[in-house]
Image (cartoon, rainbow, N blue to C red):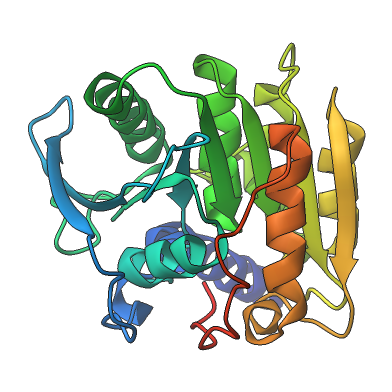
Length: 281
């Protein structure tokens, strides 16, 4: 009996500990490094306010010539939004690019949560649509940001989605990792992208890592199986969840993914330079 009670106590401590730590695991603000790369010339600083009044800080780079659309980027959960912004802006030209720091990720204010990120995505979209004017809007989501991008496509008219190392839901990832726990009851931020896809016909391109230990292949495949308009699904060879951003292959693949969802070729003024590698999300 004592052994049983002792095991039950350990189980309860383990479950309780994960419940209390999940915010730090899903939103590891402490692991987000300062930006390591200079912002592109002409970058604008934007400040919006959430529905609760929290400041949301982001970056916007307008296309040098005629813009082919606005790309809103959503970073991984430990990727500095400024570096995510620079990463996207260096690889996609002749488009406007915007990326915001998630709520609670300095300099943005407040506390992050699934619902907070979802609500802020709508605020960002609506403001930029009004600020820039009638333009096709595309969402690019990296890792956790793929869940935010999918939600935005479910709630607003998005012309195309590009998802890098996406998942069907964080809940399913957690269920596989913590089989003995009642994950559904404990998880506060399930990010069920597969449910948000219901009725969404947005052209979508997916890029996966060949050896992803964070988002198992099955979870990406489950998302792909739920898409109604998949225009591209490719895997970066010899890549990991974070290491995918260290490979030159991601540059061309990201460009082709955007071309696929946009339905037209991006005309580069010059051949894109071999960019500095950026930190993974």
